[in-house]
Image 1 (cartoon, one colour):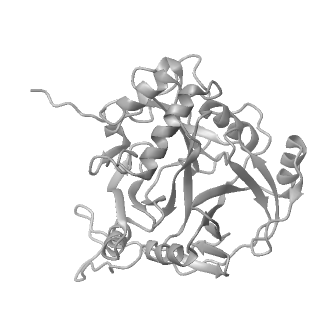
Image 2 (cartoon, helix red, strand yellow; image 1 turned 60 degrees about the horizontal axis):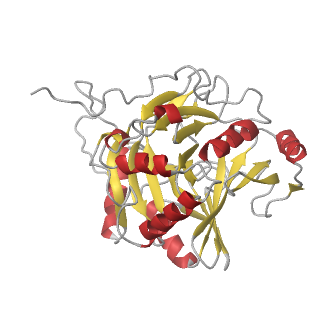
Image 3 (cartoon, helix red, strand yellow; image 1 turned 135 degrees about the vertical axis):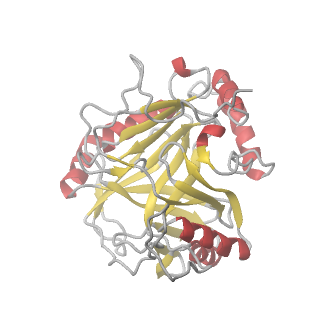
Length: 377
C-alpha cells in the first residue's frame, strides 16, 4: 500500500491563481516596523504575574492596577496587563517607523494624536479595525535596555563536533522570553479587516489558507508580516482567521531554542499549568512551537526558529487542515482546536448561531461546513 504524506502540497511555495487576493496594498498609508506590545485586562494581577514569571517573562513594572511584562530584548514591554472585571485583549500596539507616520495615520483616519501612558512614552494614534479591535500605532516610546539572554545550547550535529568532554544539562527553569512575536485574531469580517491592515499599516501576506474544497470562495486565514523592504522580518507579526466571533486566539513569544522550550515546558507542567498543544514544528512559518493556557484560559505560545522573509516573496496558498498545522509533533489537540467542552466552546457555539443569522458577517453556512471539515482533514 502506498504511503500518503499528509503534508504533501501544503507548503508556501504554492502561489496564487489568477484573480486571487494579492496579499498587499498598492499604496499603503504607512508601513509599521513591528508589533510593539499587547494590552490585556485581567481580574487577578497577582495570579497573572505568577504565570508570567513561570512562562519566562520578567516584570518590568508593577502597580496596584497595572503589570508590565518584558523579554530580554531591548524595547518596550511585551505585554501590559491592567486590572479589569474579566480577562480580555484590549488591543494591539504597532511600532511606526517614526513620528511622521503616526501623524500621517491620524490625518488620514481623522483621529487625534495621543500620548501613551508615561510609563510607555512617545506618541500614538488609536484606531479601530473593521472587527472592532483597537489598534494603537506608536513612535518614540521608551526603550528598556536589553537584559542577559538565555544562551542556546551548543549542539553536535551529525559528524560536526562543537562539544567534546562536556555534557548537556539544560536547567529545568522558565524559558526566558526574548520578545513578542505575533498575535492571532479571529474576525467575522475577515477579508474586510485583512484589507484594512494591509492598507493602513502596510502589512503584507506571507501565506493564505482556504477551507478544503472552497478555494474559489477565497481565503479564510492569513499570516501577515511587516514590510521592511530587503530586511527579513518574521513570517507573521499578525495572523487573522475567519470565524463566528471577533476574539483573541493566541499570542506568541520567542525563546532561545528547543531545549529552552522543552525544559521550560517541564517547569510549567510541574507547577500545574496546562499545555494545550506541543511540542512540534509548524508548516506555515516553520516555528518550533509549544502552546499553554494561562490561568484565565488564554492561549500563549513559546516559539523558536521561525521563518524570516523579505518583501520579495509572494503569498503562498494552502488548504486549512488539522494535519497541515504541523510538519511534526503530536496531532493538534481538541483544546487547541477549540473543541474541548467548556465555556470557550459554548461561547463559540452560540456565536455560530448569531453569525448565521447576521447578514453583516462573512461567516455563513458554507463557511461553517468548511470549518467543520478542518479537524478531521
